[in-house]
Length: 304
Image (tube, rainbow, N blue to C red; front, top):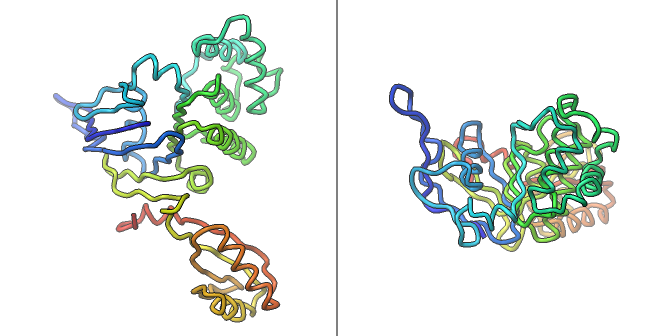
């Protein structure tokens, strides 16, 4: 669906210092795939998103979306976008803002008020808020209405730049649920986010950028997914018994203190099997969780 080939982009020049934001980036994103862009600040993630959207022209390389350039109107008509910096017209009311974007997305004017109300409800924004100017919105409300406009008319392509930034836990869960819905209907999603637990929950694959280059990729779902690091918590003093039960079931496990037991699993089915092995050994399991530990990709020498 998306093919990026040897993309490079440099800012500055003349008397200013030149900064190479992208340096030979190549990647492919399959139709219906959800890909997370992760990496430190200044790694080039937002610049890459801007090139994917056709907002920036690269100095070298190319971007093709469904075989077309990213600024082709046929691509734009299928695209939803939520920027990190919500530079909306603050003099518009929430309702007028959504109706305007509904029309820009090709919707009929007569349907605008109804669709604006439906879009607001979709992101749990109070109906009364649609009559207020965006200048009166809190950061969390702006995030919600930004997400609402990105999802208008169920776009086939969805580009999101820090969509849950500045939101409370309910807002984070809301963004997650709307992304999972878009994913379920087959949308191709590119997500730039520093919220690694949320990236892990919704993405099929992550691409790690550093200093303008793709330095690592990791598959989170599917046959090629990397092992997950699981943690079981059992009553203090029972970790050794849990490890013995896990070893008998074919797991390599190690105690972590305070009843923690660490092990590697290949997926959710294996977590369930590990819990069952421990419980059948008459050791209560107080907590079970698994993580890809995406933070390790930020450490020097982090694994691909």
